[in-house]
Image (tube, rainbow, N blue to C red; front, side, top):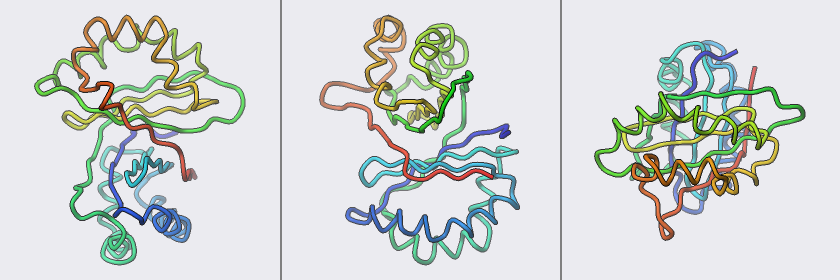
Length: 210
């Protein structure tokens, strides 16, 4: 079982969404060999339009960085993959700050939400994630049959990653009493979201595990 979880957000050039998924399927065997060498045990790719989140599970926090430096990865980034990526969007690397799990029967699907913090709220948000999030949301996550809930953070950028029986239940869960109470207290003042700036919802396109 993976000890560490890392997220990487990238973007492909507009119109290259399908070509990226084709590349991913074609190069999966090469990626699997690279992951085996550096100790990566799982990779999930989720998309929202041209934006991509790659979620990794590994033996060490440095494994993903090591994978990107292998000759195979360098060849990909200077070849077919590199031609698909948007050069104006610098990859964002996220570290896991919270992981919550429970046993859920049946197959699980993966999904993610990407959002941003208000300026200056980074330290407050990390304190909330590490010390209060589980106590506020434990009952809600259990009730909605979430198998895994992770929060990954990079500065003011946040990813909420889910393994869940039914991804269509994720957004409605924010209308539950626990979520409303959190938003009306400390959490709502930290998140940079509004009716005209909703969080981006990412759906699973590819999943690999050893």
